[in-house]
Image (cartoon, rainbow, N blue to C red; front, side):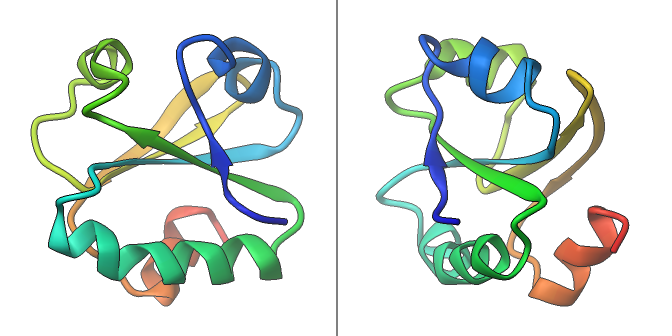
Length: 103
């Protein structure tokens, strides 16, 4: 499954009501570490159909970034049953992302 673009308009349906674990990636197009992380997240998404990887562009969705207290990018937030259960900042290899997701 490909990554999903998350906006304020689809956040409730795509994240809060998701029956799957959601990994939110707060990023910006100009961010070098974010660009390095993108293919890792695509691969993670393709290999784990039980997880939704949602991408939130902080330049377009400042309200969501503020709601999650994003102060640096990339910031990754694991959501389960509508609740944030983990939050990490910075680039991480796939092995660390899998640990974060409990895999």
